[in-house]
Length: 377
Image 1 (tube, rainbow, N blue to C red):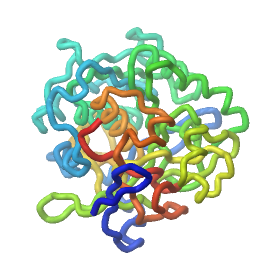
Image 2: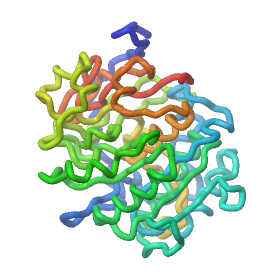
Image 3: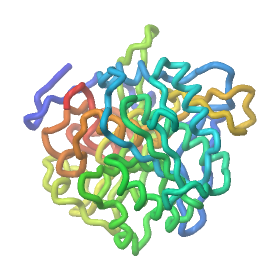
């Protein structure tokens, strides 16, 4: 049903048992980036199992229907979405073509000007290959294009997963795109992290960061007040493929930052006080599909997980970040804390589920304000 909350139209979905929303990752799942040395970050992508010869995950049509998002092939036209990841994916463009062909999406190629791949300096001196990060790249690129097929995709590959290299890639991305998606982060926060917040500042550019996949506590750069931290949910579908509920994902990242203060727009929001962050940055801000039970289709022809085919079902807040970046590109507006905590967007308030913190009405450390629904803005 729909209720009017805080002068904003918010959809409240039927509550499902907490246990259903608290399902852990399947035993056969594959973690793309299982570790990150000190001073480095890891990607947050996972696959439910090895590759198959045909798609087994949720399709672009299902995601757009679940959130009532724009469906025109021109959605996102005039905008550029930058994807920042580490290492090289030599087949990123070819795999995107296979994904597009499967789902009837417009071609996005170097030749037609839609797809560009660069190193952190904007050149073609690409870093070494890594199969885990390549899987993350395939996921990010394909789903950014799926939701905003009219937008250009700029893939910026950092030399390594060191934070310094990733921040260098971020600096290039923010100067050449209106929307930047980051599906990576450190294992924790660190005392000097606020010094790196400047990498996530650029007039006219929106920054989206996955909130992690281990529940609480908060991690960096999701904890930066300069980014939109994107948490995870689980979509449940009926036999016809229509969504019937959305709940908080048990492994979605969130929590109160130890070192970063809340943006004034967040701390001034009516629901902020109930999460107990006491003036500190609270994560996530928002959420979208990320759970293994509603994993999305990804095509990756690189060796990954001993596959017998190249189609995977991918999950993690790595899915949620490019979904939000692409939906923002569809709207063509800057999305930052001031917008997130205003009445500009229409949310589905996710009130069932728990990631170590319960999903609540209005705002929580499980799903933030909820998921973005509707075609406007």
